[in-house]
Amino acid sequence: MAKTSKKSIAILLICMLVAALGLTGCGGNDDSGDAEMVKIGIMQFGEFEALQNANKGFQDGLAELGYVEGENVTFNYLSAAADTANCPTIADTLINDGSDLILAIATPSASAVKEKTSDIPVLFTAVTDPAGSGLVADNAAPGGNLTGTSDMNPVAQQIALGKQLIPDAKKVAIMYCSSESNSKIQSDLAEAAIKEAGMESVVKTVSAIDEAKSAVESLKGQVDFIYIPTDNTLADGMTTVAAAAKECGLPTIVGESGMVNSGALATYGIDYYELGKATAAMAVKILKGEATPAEMPVEYQTDEAVLEIAINTETAEALGIEIPEEILSKATIMPAE
Image (cartoon, rainbow, N blue to C red; front, side, top):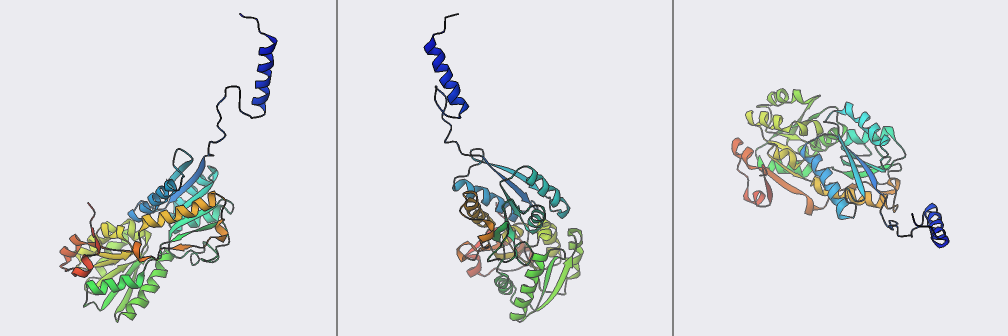
């Protein structure tokens, strides 16, 4: 073994001192520019298309704004499988995981997280009326640790589309799950729009998806079409609902395009992917310390450029409904390939 010189010992001692102080040098790698890894917890209420699109838009939007999974952000994604009873446990998991921010997709998810934390910033999306659902003090001034984007859809325009497609319609059923407050809000708007259009309305509620088929069958011969808002329960079981409606010869006008892709006749609604991207832009402001949820108003998707007509041409053909060319020419045709 070679004899160590005094100069070598001095250099070694200096390196040890520098390392203890957390400085760089002595041939070490400079990692001072490494970004801190951000942890984002995501609770998605169900696996149906609208919520999937909102989640994808959120993650894609973050990537476009510099928060790329595996580089400077990690996602802990959990689904409640459209069961409200699962939400509190998932909320606990995301909080205990040390999330820097939580995304709650749909009202049941957001409500569960709100009950569990007042410290972690929470963004919600796919929530129709946040203030009406008790998530925020006011949609314009949330005032707490929650804010986000609303999927309040153009209910009056959706009823008008139904009247265009079924011009002789005189009576419309409004169908939704009785446990969903957001659906009740939309039902009230639909009743007003139906009356304004010179038609009558009847409200039909279900408490679970297994009641939907019999509910639709009870409307056969009683109404001219069914309106279904952005109801989580019915959206999750839309394939069953749409099949029952077709068997009964009843057109279904719905709250969003994912439901059309699952067999409903038509909608004029928002783009959930774009809604997710708008939520991502809010998240970046929070993560960068530029704003807090308390001072960020709830955002709505009202730009006609991102609103879309969607028509299921297979359903239209099965029901014997001819779609006017002026509608068909600007519609997204479904089912998607």
